[in-house]
Image 1 (tube, rainbow, N blue to C red):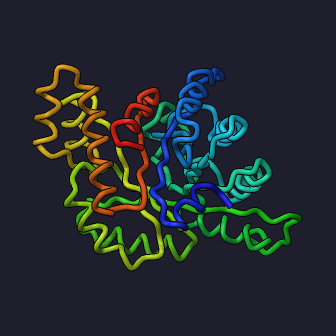
Image 2 (image 1 turned 45 degrees about the vertical axis):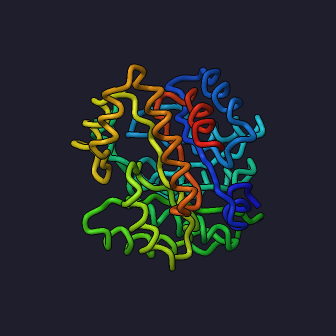
Length: 291
């Protein structure tokens, strides 16, 4: 059983942190950041060509993290592989002892650094969950028997601040039916959004990890409000960042306070910290949150 699954199943407050593979072969910084949170998180979620940008793969990064004694979460998107390659990657992950999988449809290639690349999208998020569930039953997607059966703890994404929210709730139900057991949310900055979301999902069979992206500047907050669907940074939070002499440290402090509040009110089953290019700040966020 994966550490993440064990923690969530027993009702513990799970903590995962996101890390992006390098654009190249030098993993020194990533591994240094990972070692700094070893024993403090229940999973390290490795992005899969995040924002359609070419990098080293999530699979090889997960293997390196596991070799260092951390618990990896393999991200798999449907953008770059067909169902044959996706099933093969899932089996390969199982061979390496990687059990946690986060399924995503993936951003279109036009937003990345290889806009001329052809997207695949043979399987979307739900299709990947279904594929992993079928493999875990001992067969492939066309019914062929497997020699050795993988074990997966499956997750997916959700956006708590979505209009209408019922669309996200409907998708959550479909993802749960396809095999998802935990959900990582889009970044959240206000408690009221999580209160409403907790109330409307309390009957669902899925654990919720609230997304935490520490703010680095007023410009970052404004950009997300104006350009990232489902994210809302309240004006009082922006005012705190604006007034702070050290805006990065204030963002870390705000993130820590928010995590404490989420935990105290039992508004989620854990948190997923996305430092986005500043993974070295994750220990400070954990300190600020008392984790």
